[in-house]
Image 1: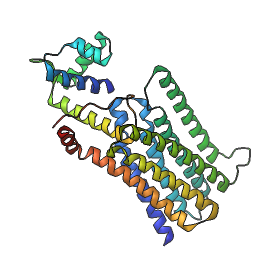
Image 2 (image 1 turned 30 degrees about the vertical axis):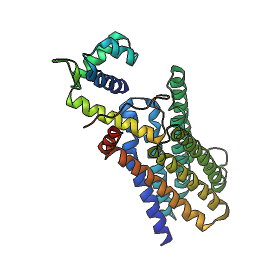
Image 3 (image 1 turned 135 degrees about the horizontal axis):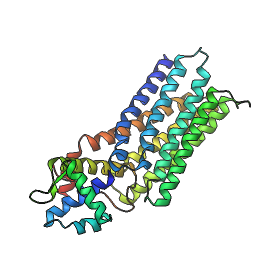
Image 4 (image 1 turned 135 degrees about the vertical axis):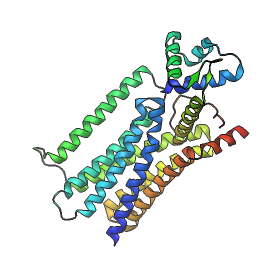
Length: 228
Length: 94
């Protein structure tokens, strides 16, 4: 039963991420700026990481469970990396910054391919235990997600409008979700485990609501703006 | 794509004022004149603007501009700074 609820939470998270991709691709589509390609990629990877977790939960006794666990770990870390890099390069695009973006993006793709190869083609050296690596990856995810949250919060502070508060809040919820998973990994606290899933789902729902509010009811916002 | 949105936005505001002077548009977009002419031709081919009787946005162009501005608003909500210190232009009314 617990497993079923967990699978459901992962599936819903994955669906939310894949729906969000539809909106996240728009900045890239409409501006043609490659630095925004990290947004849809980030949410695709985030969705995939939740799907890999579902496979892990389903295939409890199968041989490839270890591969799936590693894939989930890597995919989620790369998701946060893509999002963080997008926020880092979202400022004023200069020629130098464009070049740095291209180098960083290429570096990320190369790192991604190498990491996946290491999972599927066992390297000559012994890999550290999954549990240890999992904790380090959670820490990395927290750092990336905190960076994104701080960037989004800084933008909100500059505008101080209510509508710019919700996205940073969503990112903060993802940070606490990752933190709760780290706590659960360290002391197996059931509350932390449930909390992590609730926080994550709430964060993703916040993203979806903001996206729907922007794209589905844009003309109400227009009228309001014009009235002001 | 980005430049299309920017040019359409400027053209929209210029049409409100008086007759469109391309050099004003060029100054605002910061694009060389010959390249601006090329973009204007491309926008005409796409059916986003028309120059009969004068240069102005078509219904399709206004729809594109509305979507473009919604995307800029979305980016603002996400905390992404598209242009440093510059917010998106006021939204078009439907």
